[in-house]
Image: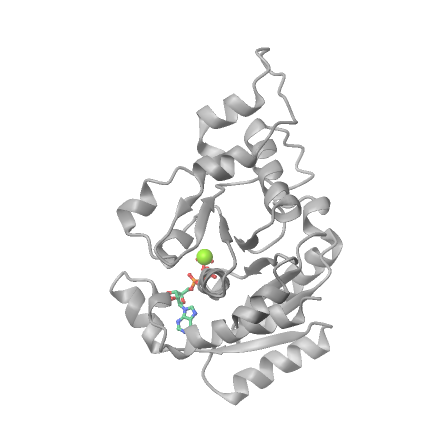
Length: 271
Ligand SMILES: Nc1ncnc2c1ncn2[C@@H]1O[C@H](COP(=O)(O)OP(=O)(O)OP(=O)(O)O)[C@@H](O)[C@H]1O
Ligand SMILES: [Mg+2]
């Protein structure tokens, strides 16, 4: 495994994870980030969901997680980066590598976490300073930085400019065997293609039987989507969440093992 990591080290995997609410985006994004870190990659996980909870999945305690101030809500930082001293006039170019250094939070499972906070859609006419900072930071992390990056996103790709989206190696759209989740996956796929993402795959999650796989497979082939993998429904994940723990620390969980295999598949698939 170490050997594989070395072989692709120059590539720096950049993965975005999207999907309908509750399908398992955070579980998959967190699981992939931890698997990449275990395989020797320096890994940054980005929580780009407006109601962030990736921190808990990466093993932080609730009070540690609640102390994290999302980048877009860090008024002092936004001001320091964008202020020109003139009211209503913002600076739009500034350095952001120091933000990674100063605001990435180390988590128990070996991944560094950055919580972005709410970002408004491209084209919504918003040029507010917080958006400028988050966008530049996303671009820096995805395009310029020599680290593996996993993004936990809401159901869409709105936060990303085209220049950033094009540099994402792969977007995984998580869906369970539910028509609403699959219709959402289809819509996200379309948005991803429009944004310039090169590789987009569906990951079927919470699978309990072959019929569910068939339903996802059929929907995918009828709608021009490709399924990369299936992850089983695992009661160990549910139990861990009930106790307020991260399921990712249970390496014997079938779902956690499946995410590890997904990580290896991605590493092999990356040119
Ligand atoms: N393979 C699985 N087996 C069992 N439970 C799972 C599995 N994947 C995810 N879950 C559980 O389903 C719930 C939703 O998962 P998660 O929070 O990852 O979804 P999400 O898509 O990020 O949701 P949101 O849209 O609220 O951010 C969680 O309690 C999670 O532990
Ligand atoms: Mg989530």
